[in-house]
Structures are given as C-alpha cells and as structure tokens.
Amino acid sequence: MSDKIERIKTLIIGSGPAGYTAAIYAARADLKPVVYTGMEPGGQLTTTTEVDNFPGYPEGIDGPTMMMQLQSQAERFGTEVRIGMITAVEFSTEVGGIHKATVDDSIQIEAETVIISTGATAKYLNIPSEQKLRGGGVSACAVCDGFFYKNQDVAIVGAGDTAAEEASYLANICKSVTMLVRKDEMRASKAMQHRVHNIKNIKVLYNTEVDEVLGGQVVEGLRMVNNVTGEKSEIDITGLFIAIGHKPNTDIFKGQLDMDETGYLITKGKSTKTNLPGVFACGDSQDKEYRQAITAAGTGCMSALDAERYLAAIETPASVA
Ligand SMILES: Cc1cc2nc3c(=O)[nH]c(=O)nc-3n(C[C@H](O)[C@H](O)[C@H](O)COP(=O)(O)OP(=O)(O)OC[C@H]3O[C@@H](n4cnc5c(N)ncnc54)[C@H](O)[C@@H]3O)c2cc1C
Image (cartoon, rainbow, N blue to C red; front, side, top):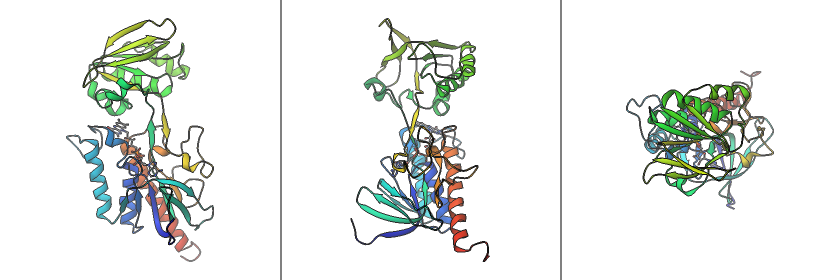
C-alpha cells in the first residue's frame, strides 16, 4: 500500500458509454473526474464491429472506434483515464462523507463522490463453436444486431421474458426465428408466451439445446440436440442470438448498496442516486430494461449532474445560499 492516499472529487468506476459520458459532464463541471477502466476498457461496445443506432453516426461506426472517441472527448475536458480495476470499496454513509476505494488490490483512493458505471456482462453458452463465432453471427443483443439479419433465418436461445421479447423483435425483421427452449416450457410470462406462439414466423422448439454452431468465419447453421431423446438435427441460419441473461458487474458493492435479486443496483426515482449519499449509479449496472449505449450514456449524464448538485449542496447548504 502507498502511504499517501490520493483524494479526488469524483471517482468514475467503468469506462463504457455511461462512464465516459459521466466523465464528459463531470469534467466540464470542474469535478476533475478520474475514470478507472476496469478489465474491459471502453466497455461492451468494444466487442462489436458495427454500431448503427448511436445518434450522430449516419454511416454507423465500429464499437472500438466509437469508444476511443468518447474517451478522447472526456479527456479533452481534463478527465484522467487510468487503467485499473476497483477491487474493493468502503462507502461512507454520511452526507459529505469520504468514500474509499482500492485499485488492483493495492492502491487506496478517496473520493467525495463516486459514479458507478460498471455495466453488465451478457451470459453465453460457453461452448467453443459459439465463442469462436461471437461477432461473426453470434450476438447477445437482438436489438443491437437484429437489423444485420434482415430477411434472413436466425435462431434464439432462451426462455425468459427477454428471450420472448427479443424473439418477437427479430420476427419483425427476419424471415424466420427458431427459438430454442431448454425445458419443456418457457419461463416467460403467459402473456409473452402467448405473443410468441401467435407470431407465424417464430418456431419454438422445447427440450432443445445447441449442440454446435456451424460455420467457419460466420454462422452458417446450427446443430441442435433434443435433451430428452438425444436426437440431433440441423438448420440453416445466419444469426444466433443468445438471450439467457446478463450479470451486472456489481459484486464489489454487495452489502453496501441496495440491489435487486440479480444484482442490478437500485436507484431512487428518476435519479441516479443510490441508497448512499454521494454514490451514484448509471448505465447497465442499474438498467435491466433497455441496455443500450444511448440509454447508458443518458444515465451517465444524469449521474454527473446528480454528483455536481450533491457537491454544490454540501459546499453551499440551502440555509446559507
Ligand atoms: C455484442 C454487443 C453488441 C452491442 N451492440 C450495441 C449497439 O449496436 N448499440 C447499442 O446501443 N448497444 C449495443 N450493445 C449494448 C451496449 O454495449 C451496452 O448497453 C452499453 O455498453 C452499456 O454501457 P455501460 O457504460 O453501462 O457499461 P459497459 O459498456 O458494460 O462498460 C462497463 C465498464 O465497467 C468496467 N468495469 C466493470 N467492473 C469494474 C471495476 N470493478 N472497476 C473498474 N471498472 C470496471 C468495464 O471494464 C467496462 O469498461 C451491445 C452489447 C453487446 C454485448
């Protein structure tokens, strides 16, 4: 441990669209933010080749380039971006209290405000052929990538509400959607099941799992296995969507911040305020509903404004102003 502990105004944990947007706003409000990038500098978008739906890029842009531009924009106003992982936190429960964080299990840092933008990680099946074709037709985001499979045959894996929602989204764009459900029934609400079963170009296969994703550089087909009979079958598809859930990257906040049963941070009302004063949460770490770059950026902006107002209220209490 270094002996002199650095104290900053605003610590931003995470470098995705939420973190960098928070940094742009915080830096311009003179909060001198420090961003720790974590294990995936630039966040989830660095794993995708084409972002077509972020406003301001009429020709689309590849994810890594977009994230480098967001980083440059944040740095232009004085944000300090550091490579490092926040491995532990000790948040103050007092208004005006100082929050402590540990970087890479070794360095201590103190902050007057903390913005959490640690995102979420999509779950995959983790079979070799699926991993090999990630970005080559295997995607964990139908709303992001469905458009690229317009009028094509695709499949989706999952049985919950999100999978059902994404299957109906894909059915609007694609020629056919084969939905693989591992059990003999869906977990999705009855209403969502009803919706899926009423869409003509969705075919639901129960007791069915992925045996292998077929294709060399891009997805060309799918070998499926019926987990009751053991029977294998193949279909031709160009896209495979995995919709088996996300895990928010919030483990280090457990026991200190309010979160739901899956680990999504809970924020108050329309704000980004957590249950602790001076600690704010934005992006996918607190959003299981929309999970898009633009919504993450929007809440990143909100968190910087919330942090700025929090500090202003401490420095100039209402009774004095
Ligand atoms: C394959 C794919 C394609 C997508 N395509 C699109 C698209 O076309 N359009 C769109 O709008 N959305 C798309 N999305 C969704 C979009 O990427 C996310 O909604 C968005 O990135 C969420 O932003 P975020 O800043 O909340 O978190 P993330 O982008 O997940 O970033 C989280 C950041 O937190 C860091 N971090 C985590 N834990 C720690 C820690 N302990 N200490 C320090 N840092 C930490 C990570 O390293 C990372 O930098 C896609 C997602 C995927 C997976």
